[in-house]
Structure formats: C-alpha cells, structure tokens
Image (tube, rainbow, N blue to C red; front, side, top):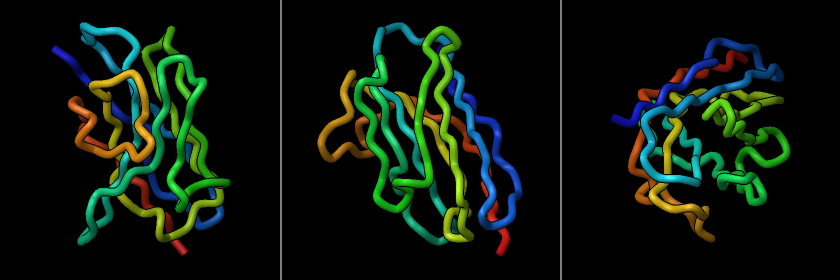
Length: 126
C-alpha cells in the first residue's frame, strides 16, 4: 500500500521560510515524477512544483518561481519544498503527490498524479 506523508508546515511571518517534506513508501514502480500542490480556503487546488526522478527536470509555478525550490532525495524516498520570502497569499494546505509518469508534462496537472498525501498546513501572517 502506497503511503504519502507530508510534514513541515506551520505558522510563519511574512518574509519567512519553511521547508516541507514528503516521504513515500510502498511504491511498486520505479522512477515516478512527484509534485507539490496547494489549496487555499475557497479556492481551487493549484500546482506548485514538479520534479522528475533524477531531478534533471524541475518546474515551478509562476506564482512561486524565485521564492520556492523543489528537490528530492531518492535514498530517503523524500521530496522537499523550500518556501522562502513567504507571503500571506501562500497560505494554503500543501499536498504532495506521486505521478503515474516519469516525466512532468509540459503543462503538468493534478490528474497525472494518483497518490496523494493528507496535506500540511502553511499559514503566513502579515
């Protein structure tokens, strides 16, 4: 059984930083891409970042480019999201997901991901 567990969320002041972690266990196929998504109250889920198995390709949404970075440590089955220069608009539940595919598509979307975590809350105060 695949388990996806996020951690690292919390309350931070605007301008601060957090590092979110996502650990996956029970995968029965190799080399999936992984992604971060977020959903704020009353808003639709939006993509944040995607990274392929060997990290040669990473993509970040325009809203977080230059402030967030995505990485993974396959030896630990863990993906990270380093969120810096946080803004109140970054407040959301952040979700980790495992893709069906090895690649992050040109216009990758949530439907490509079939295993999801329960989320970790990030709250940015002004």
